[in-house]
Length: 98
Image 1: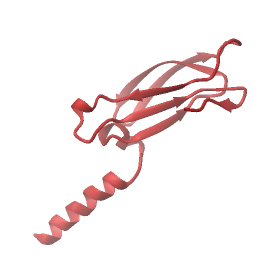
Image 2 (image 1 turned 135 degrees about the vertical axis):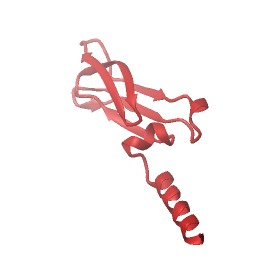
Image 3 (image 1 turned 120 degrees about the vertical axis):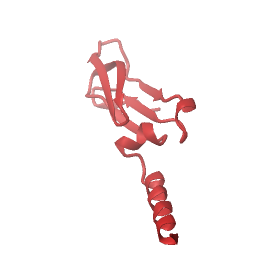
C-alpha cells in the first residue's frame, strides 16, 4: 500500500513540476507563448480543448505596431490556478516585448 501511495505522489509531483507542456496550460494553470508569423495582426482566439488554441490574424497595416496579448483562464473553474497564453506579434522581424 505504501508503494502505491508513494508512486501516486511521485506521478502527481512530476505532472505539476514538468513545466508548461501544451496539455498543462489549461488543465494545471501553466503558460504557453505563441509567436504569430511576422507582420501579422492578432484578431481573436478560440480555445478548443486543454491544449489547443486557434488564433485568427490578418496582415498588419503600415501604421500598426506589434503588440503582446495575454489570454488568461478564469481560476474559479480550475482547482490548480489560471492558465495563460501569451501571444506575441512581430513587425519586420522585431518581436513585441511584454
